[in-house]
Every structure is written in structure tokens, then in C-alpha cells.
Length: 239
Image (tube, rainbow, N blue to C red):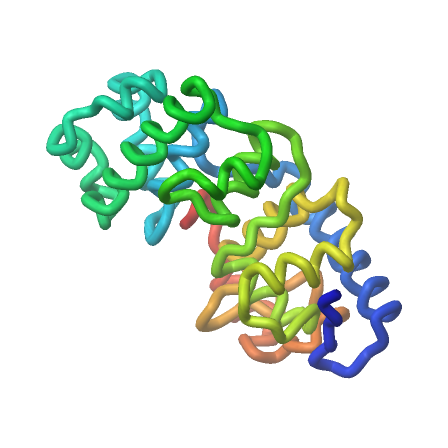
């Protein structure tokens, strides 16, 4: 069993209580937090999440309307002309690798699942180009199955919050799962990601206007003057 060691040396009980207080504050701060990728069904979300690697959600959302119209089913993706798909998704970057992933994923869906996206983690991560993060995004947002999405924002914030010092995404996921009730995993992930995109930036967090300042051991990493900090706050949508 993975044992978390709080960077601040606090007990597990104290850490759980602080983490849950922080999440409650984020509930109030981001009541409309949600997945910022546009989708209508599990297949669209799966494709969009694959495209979002090393790309902003905003840019993905400019590409997917054309892509989704061209390839409405897994069978369409599986039989797609590679050059044509590459041309559509080129703006998202790494378009050749992403084309390989999407076509391979779709072929596996057709061969193993009748062209339907499965609703279980073990089946999703067995698909080409689908890792645990992508699988949790699909499970949480398309199937209503609680999941924790450890992206770069999530990892950065769990370190700054002193929730964990782990660097492996799977270990971070397991540590945070022990801090936050399972029913809240999906929305908690959105809230942390939103906060990372809007306030707790990688280079210069807006500490002076952060609603979590009193509970955050990293307070002061960024400007604490409210006027200076306010200038750093960014509206969405983001990467």
C-alpha cells in the first residue's frame, strides 16, 4: 500500500482535513468547473483528449468540429486516409503521432469492442495511444465514473499544496485518492486544473489573490501584493 509522506511533515489526518478544506474552497471559487474539451459522446471525448497532448484545449476545440463531422464513428476513424487526417489535426502539433494513435485506437475499438468506447479503465488503457490520464478523463466526463486526472497542472498544484512529493503520475493519483472522497474525484480534478490555469501558474502564481493562501504552504512563491497578483490572473479557456 502506498504511504504518502507530506512534504510539510503533517499527519495523514491533518493532511486529509486540509486537503478537503482546500477542495471546498475551490468548489466555491469555481462552481462551473468542467471539462474544457468540446464533445458529445465518449468517442469524441476520447479523440479530443488524445489531441490535447501538448496542445491547448482551445486549439483542439477549433479542430474537432471538422474532424468529428468527417469521422462520426470508430469505423470511420479506423479506415481514415492518414494524410487527410493529418491535414485536419496538424494545428494540434505532433499530428503524425496523434494520427497513428487515433487510427490505432479506432481499429482496436472495432476489433475488441464493436466500435464502442468501453467504460472500464482496464479496457481503455489497453487501447493504442490511451494512457491512464486519458482514460480517467473519458471515464469521469463521459461515463460518470469517478477518476483523477493527473496532468501537469494537477501535478504542480499537489506539490505546491503539500499534498504529496511524489512525481510519478500514478502514485500521485493514488495519494490524492486517499485524501479526497471518491465521489469528488472527477470534479476535484477539474477544479485543480482550472486553478492551475487561472491562478497558480507554473512560473509566477498569483499568491496575493489566491483563495487558498491561508492553507497553502507555498504561499509567497509568487507576488503576495494583491494588486500585482491580480494582474496575473487569467480568464479561460486554457491549455
